[in-house]
Length: 328
Image (cartoon, rainbow, N blue to C red):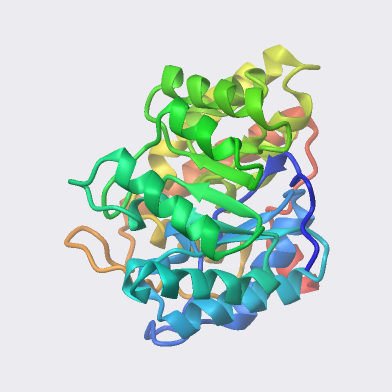
């Protein structure tokens, strides 16, 4: 399929994956409802097969089915990018085969950074393997995702400049922990390829990314109130004082919504927006379960009330009532 020269700036949610109550099956109706909600909320595109999607907990066939289903449901309304490199697929050749398989159902196939080298292998090894993948996938449009799990490998500005020089990177999700690191990579990318789209995953860096000529936001908070990030992308230069106020809210809210994530996101949609999905997840950790305590629910409710006040004060159109799902 023809690939666009550049993807759209704006908000690209990291899609959650609803499951049936036992966690055994993907809840496709829930995914359809979420997609309509993301699009109605003004999102520029969707990122599936990422950590929020519980990508490591899906089988190879489920990964393919999910990408195909999301793309078909979007039906050209917004573009889709999808994670495409998984060590459990096997060799680089097999990973390339999977990338090519899903490429018909997304606008860019995203290289998951930590899946191409172990924590003990250096950047030169990583770059060599990326080059091999590029050689195996022709002119396929690509993305880069600095996934923090199972370990956090972030790229240097020189590595980003090397990637940009290929002319094939259309989506970059940055997870830098420091503003200087993010800014250095963004500058390097823009210097080489004007079609390079650079998104921050950090809500706290959203405004800084935009003011540094970044492309927008792609992170977990867009599963809760994407319209605030959409507003920030569209109005940060025209209304700088309000933009600072929105950034302060997003920074503080981030501490609440990421607790027990993605359970928190699924519960939030069910409790606050009336989406009929379960909070079931497949991720298994000692601190994560699918049941939120009364205190945890109260924190989400207080965050929701603060968000409604912020949204109202800005005059932002939103879809934060159960009416959207009932009418969909």
